[in-house]
View (cartoon, rainbow, N blue to C red):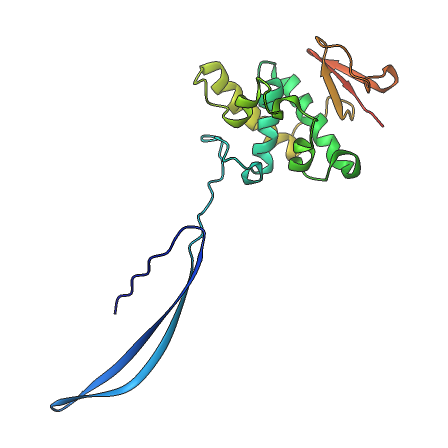
Length: 200
């Protein structure tokens, strides 16, 4: 027996089929059993999970792994810097996980996606395209920077790299005027173009 069922994407479908079993008795067929079979199929569309090789945003950052969302943040905020500076940016993000009330939650997604925290994630920011599609330029420097940012994200998550920020949870580029929270008593260290702070 073959049963074909047409279903639409993103739906749960339920179908019934009656099956009759017959047996041959000399010159005639005798129906010996009747079964009602219910088929239930979950045909919801499987969402693609972005990978290092194909990091194109799906339109929903919750599809990203922790490593992916952290790599996007590092790339969007510090792709043009050296590895030690990228590590510092990653650690300043990780250091926020220990203060979920202040920074929106105890996950990388919650911390990074909290409104108005990281400019690269703001709609209209020139770095937003680099967050959504890190490979869009196909430029060899950007491709290498993406691979490095992705690797750094994994190593910071696994504590394979030490925190060079001395526990900082904020930073800003020295080229911009200091934000209100950038008080001298909170300052910890300068790494490359970034000034790092531990803000209570």
